[in-house]
Amino acid sequence: MKLDLKEFGRFNLVLYTSSLNPANITNLNDLTKPEVKIIAISDPRFNSVGTYAEETLRNIGIWDNIKDKIVLTDSPIQALTFVASGKSDAGIHYDTCPFDTAPEKINANTLKVVQKIPAQYHSQIVSEIALLNEAKNKKLGSIFIQYLTSAKGQEILKKSGIECMAQPV
Image (cartoon, rainbow, N blue to C red; front, side):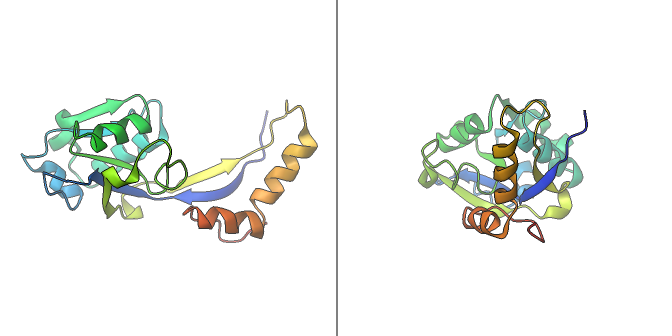
């Protein structure tokens, strides 16, 4: 079964701390400081943000120095909660999710983005969509995909902080 995948958006990674930031973290290299005790990331086996976080930390050459500080969480929201509550010093997450897209899940005032992570440190983070062969309402699904990848759909995504495709369909 081959799906016709269509890209509809891209994400960036950020390094974040609690709004108090007691370890005074300003960038990824600060994660190696002795005062940084715990770094929360979503488990790479179960969530893409964890995969990109690990890839980033390996690519900048600090993974081996900090791997014993890393706590893998079941979900990205759990990692954010650990940082917001002070149970963890820092975390890595997508730049909009859930800060802008689901503010009811985490109080953004309890967190602070300290660095937008340069894209050169990880693979491109692309969101794709496809109509399943088993879809019960293929016509409606197709209309939704067309809208999401249209100029209007891309405009809405951009307002939510999602980097859009170069050329809307």
